[in-house]
Amino acid sequence: MLRFESTYLPAGTILKLNINDLLVDGVGGLILDLDNTIMLPNSGEFSEEISNWIETALDKGLKIIIVTNNKDESYLDGVEATLNKYNIPLIIKAQKPRTKNLKKAIEYLNLPPEKICIVGDRVLTDIWGGINVKIKTAFVEPLLGKQENILFRALRRLEKVFLKTA
Image 1 (cartoon, rainbow, N blue to C red):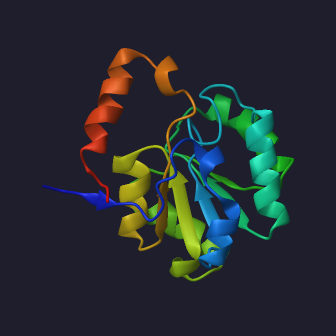
Image 2: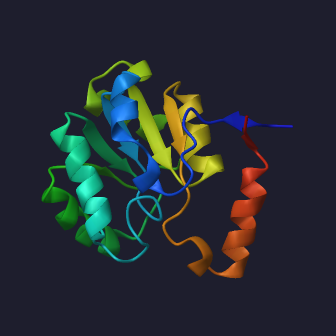
């Protein structure tokens, strides 16, 4: 059976991903998923906690780019306005786990692949995509958690079958 191993498995959302640990491991750049990883879907804004996490990462020298499979251009225009406050670029319609747009993100970060980590809440898009381009991966819990509809929660449970854990 197809199984994917994530480099980092924090027990919770991105807020549990320790920035100092990433830096100690040599990570210099982050490819962040958008919906449910750093932003509630359709919100167009960061929560205060996420905003603080991103500011800390940037202050400590991490380069960041957002790569999303989202295709809703009217929503993404609002997202881009939020990201512009932090000078963070956005790649939309990425089609993860396909590698084309992940490779563009790696080029933008201008770092060797071993110094880049993709952070996301989906095994079959974010983690698989990161493995495909040979970068570090961090599988995080979605921001929504139990508030998602039952069908999507079931899909996430099914997807976790593909995640190799210790």
